Length: 273
Length: 100
Image (tube, rainbow over all chains, first blue to last red; front, side):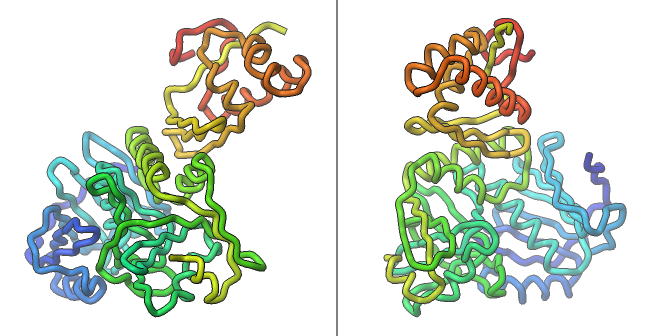
């Protein structure tokens, strides 16, 4: 059972607005060095706009948590609590604000941002997907699968007429009944942030490597099962799980899902149009 | 053997597409996919119909299997689902969705 979070309030007077997926979060801190760290790390995702949401970060030594502890997210009195070995945080969805206690590193706030975005997306029929995504001819293509299936490989093999949105965590929103993928700063093996653009989702590909390229449209049930296994779930809370399940059902109704078995060379991209 | 009654847990979300069903546990996000036989049993899990009758009416006419073998397989199947908390088993009829 997670311990309760009871830490001093932040006296933040430096801030950076980090906008991912069109959702601007103002990250406030009292530490100017941490503000610079955020500006450097989030680059094009730092926007000169007002944040619709805010996170106050207190840079401190986080004690009392196993440094190797996995991420835990739970709901307590209408407020999300989250912690990992390197941070504690709370997020109040009604007030659109939260607090983070972490050491001066970029990984903790990155994890908190991912979790907060998944919570916000779940309210809107969207999700973060363990997938790379790229834009080609104005359309977004998502490549998902288990570790080693080829998500980063597809990004590495992408031809020059594509734009990387992410090689790690695809950001999917439902807007006016259609699905849109956004670039994210959440990088994987490529260690390269995606371009801060968006495009309507044309297809989702479930990857596996094979001696030759083969593409096959998946039946809805199998597509739904595979999609659910790759959506980033942080909050094991029944209502949240139901929302994500509904979002996944609606996604497979609207977007074609393919099984893509591929030999890892550039020719696989001949199939992606 | 005494009849058993099965009902769908309230701690799940499910969707049947064609003759297959995808189920997720809302407690731990575990995902299950049922084939056509599993879906036939799952969709009849109303807590009021004995498993033997479900097998007799929903499984045996649709799938080439003896009633004895079908019931044995069905019992193994429902016990497996129950062990994951997505199905509840009772020795007596229960109202749909009620806790045991």
